[in-house]
Length: 203
Image (cartoon, rainbow, N blue to C red):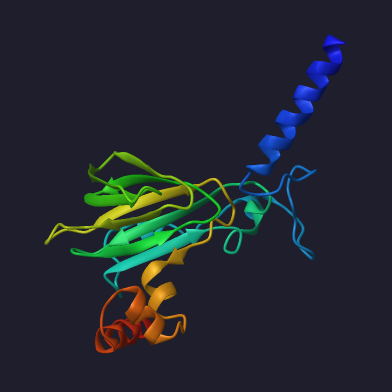
């Protein structure tokens, strides 16, 4: 009788834990795309080197991803990375990651970061080199380099090989939602919304 109870509990827990995973579990050690023969290079990604060298050359903010798209060996592994480069005054605008939390480590300079929870409470923090901050899965968050002279660089780890990114400015004002709906939703005029839509579609 007791063993049946333990078995039932184990099945329930396994089911619950499986439904909260960011990526589906795989039944092999790793996944290899068709036509690829794995070797040590398959498990190596060298695309972050330039991103760790300070300010981006062509923008005020740049993200370099190492997700399953850029690094196929991550498929099924439930991990990914991103390097975030901020020029002085650079901002990573409010956004969410629908499939993973984000663990951010500042490796150069300092950043002002913030998140908004489901109760609409804003949490902000100033992070220095070596500081970590976690952005819970699905919550709106941002990072900004408020230093007027020096760049900042951060590394972000995710619990999904494809965390996804939903940029709020682009989603709200660059997706084609009717401008009248946006004006009424934000309790503003059509001219203001038109400016926001123009800015979102240019960037």
